[in-house]
Image (cartoon, rainbow, N blue to C red; front, side, top):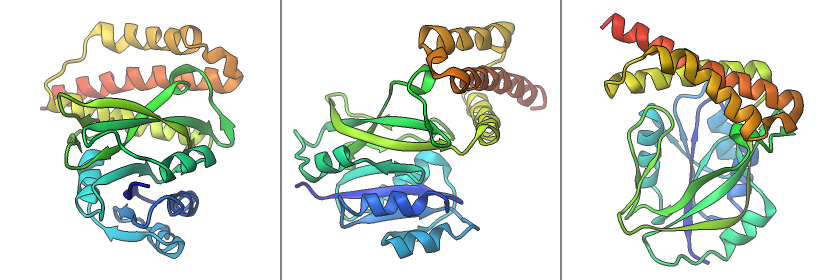
Length: 251
């Protein structure tokens, strides 16, 4: 078994953090929670579950994850969000994990949920994300939202066995709150990069996104959950460009 550290970012995640940390401790002797000022007892619950809690200021998703990686005991990192839980198959894979080389990265499938309902189609359906990597070769970029890993040119990509159970949102109200938050963060990111809003990406793009998620990606097979998710993603696309137009107008 290759030793790895588990780095978890958290803010007011008391509803999930115990499950996340408890499962992570089955695969690592170094489970870290990067707590960015929680006020709901997240840090205390994480510590009680066996995590090493680091109190930090929010540096964006990528920046906070990089800070955690730098303080980890081991070079191999399993990166988690506080609302993600390792399933039994992934636990077995991690316990027997032997990297091909230090330039290898490993994607993990996420099974996203609205409450207790798994979403198997649409934009959340085939969700694979790189979560296992060597910090000597890989780091996160500094994006405010939708952060990505900066990979070496000779990277080798592989896929882990098993699933991350992702308790994405608690209910539809939580989905809409998250949609608005991500839209604003995306608009700020686009503003920093000099992007502009126009008629196409503000009005035509959201309609196309709904069609892709609900029809082409079979979101309708998730029934009402699929419909609401497709509408939320369409609204997010509209809102981020509307906000961007406002931000650029007031510069």
